[in-house]
Length: 434
Image (tube, rainbow, N blue to C red; front, side, top):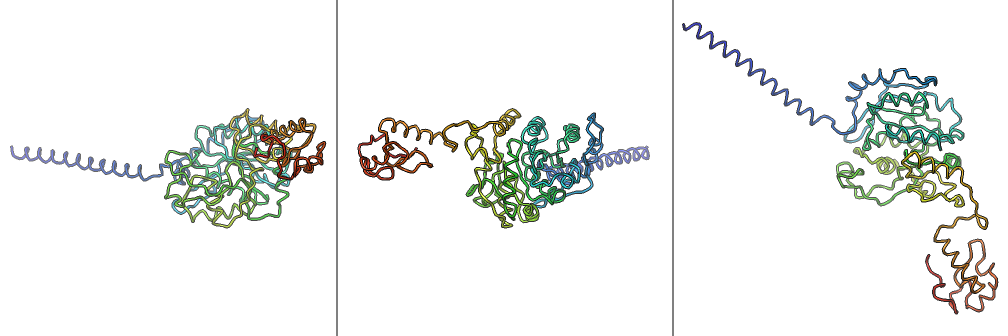
């Protein structure tokens, strides 16, 4: 009886030991999985391992699907060459999934500028509105217009068909997310250096910006000898946003300074051909910052001593209330921000391209404050037949002249148009800020 009993005990011990070993193995496996989950890149930004090992193999067959488009295939699918965006605290790699034909710059006209439009993958209607408006005009000028789009798995087939039709998109493995804007712009700079290095200028803009390509090319031609320069609306003494819930949030770990260096506003800035390489090479000296314009045209441009030229009239970050065809500031504008729907984009372009100035009496621009000033002058002229002291009709008319009785007014009112005598002028007509 003793031997079977001992055998039973031994069998039970063996079973318990096996279960314990398996439980221990599962326990350690759970711990390793937890560590991997919390220490793997859970940031919206995407690293090389996520794409090059897993996703890229799954994406390639989809990208090569035949579409029903009757347009000949001009798309280049590039996945072999890997590019690296290196920062002080982190490094990201990416590849170009869809690009225009490799010789788009060499075989096209003698381009003066490459326009990169940063566009979200789902903004299909907005891209079509741009193509049918100002980008269509760009085809008649020396400007090459390209859309820079991030990776979105559910829209890969749509992007492939769109590229087959238009051949104007650069789609990379960088995940589509607002916090990846810095990486998307850096990929555009890299593409410009490697595929379009012969073009003298690069213009970066957004999908809610209307651009006047004719004025852009003129602007570039007038500055063809400039080097090491970025043109745009330059902001100075701007503090980083430290609110964690804000889309422009920048942590102290990413950038610790109190103010950003002077930087050009993101909706539209122009850089000379030698700038992109300098910005890309200097990124390794700084931590990654998701705010593209502050980081690239501010921090990195400041590090490499790139000049930033302020031109708020040509590159407008605000949306105008109305287009004034009699205002040279409007007719010669290069980019205007704030048209985030297809209808708004098309209307803005119609205003720029079709509206003509129909003012009969003067061609120079008057804003509403100047119009009110002119109204006051005209009313006073009707009452007194002379200009009030210290005020004049327009910049084109000499002060105190051009008005009936203008010379007599100098004697009667003590000082005339340039004097400070008030005479009998009612207080409401005395010189004021309007």
